[in-house]
Amino acid sequence: MTALHWKLVIDAADPHAQAAFWAAALDYHREDHSALVTRLLEAGAAPVSATITVDGRPAWRDLAAVRHPDEPFDPASDTGLGRRILFQRVPEPKQDGKNRLHLDLHPAPGTRKAEIARLEALGATLLQEVTQAGGSWAIMADPENNEFCVH
Image (cartoon, rainbow, N blue to C red):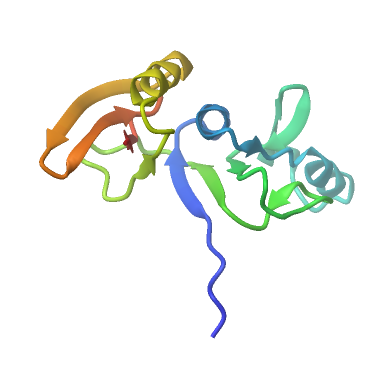
């Protein structure tokens, strides 16, 4: 059996703002689907209402993605073919309570405090610092209050 290809999909109120935050946080590439969007619009295969302008380029209104810079991608669409996070617009707000799934970030040893400060400057919020017998980490929230940890 071949291992399955996957991407992480995160619901968002503003997928493009979330993609910008996570691209900066992870040092990932923010995908530019403008060539694909333009081709589909010109062919009449996508409605203009499904698009917006982001950074001066056409983009999908309800979708944005980031990918690991070393992973393969389709050059015709700039769509990642490996480690990738897709943000999709949803109408409902995030529900209160703990996320059932979250990212753990692992900066270089001894740099956690600096990494927390960098992430806060990007728009994240420090929620809690945890110290337990098994280790220590920080619980943070991205600009839409999705929790993640920094170890």
